[in-house]
Length: 349
Ligand code: BDP
Image (cartoon, rainbow, N blue to C red; front, side, top):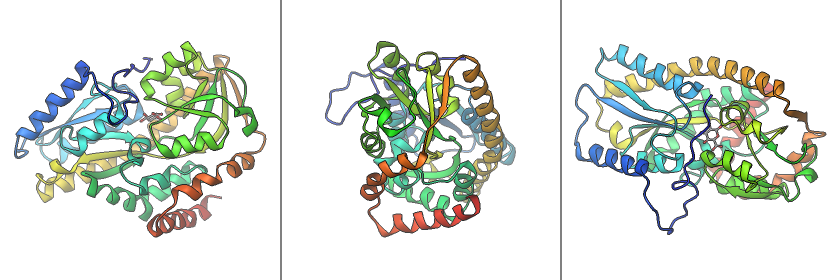
């Protein structure tokens, strides 16, 4: 088990702030320069792929599987070089690099996409999906395709969705049973306005930062807690410090695998088909690994003495966050997307 690396220099950098470039950022910049210098992807392309999690995490293993499939379908011409464990930087930075062709493929969570494309906000709405099965069905169907396509004007080709389970709150202070228990807590959130609003509506104080900074911030008391799924709570060893995990299951947003559009447009139609097909086929594999990893993480965390609790009344949380729905649903396209997702939800009550 490895602790997530810190990204002190890359995390939480607002526009207009002066950046001191870390070696990692310079590496990223170097990769970008190389990629931009090449005018075409010749046969025998190796796609540089960014992943925050370590190489053994389900998303990383799914990307590796996708690479294996691609190699098979292309007689070894197309492959993936995975930079796991946040080697290329924090998600927000690597995503930006991907939009202008510095990184070929990237696995990101929805958070950093929220500021790029409003359709992605919908999948991050609290309590949108009834459960994980609902999310999977919706992402396999028309709603998923719509959101993936919405990324294209932003320099990204959406390839597929991976799982990220249900996110719940963990903290160093006390069990959260009602929204009132969250009053005044300093909670880390992803750099996303939507998630900042969500924490505010629940009465806590949001502190946006990259995931790599959370462990240290918990230890130092900079924050009281954060929120995530079982595997990330486990993998970052946050459970060793924040010993109350309260199952609010407030967000079931999926992860997204994106390719740089600049690269995509240099591929032939048949290469594009191979990339899509390989990504698609890595999804069931990912889901199997995800389910196993979730069970495993939960078992270890419970055995470690963490106090896990159900909330008293989930509806109380649902009501508190209604303003988030009101504020982040702005367009008819977003409303249609919600309706389509709700329709699929009827099978997953
Ligand atoms: C994890 C996602 C990862 C995000 C992280 C976060 O897998 O991509 O960086 O949450 O909270 O579940 O930032």
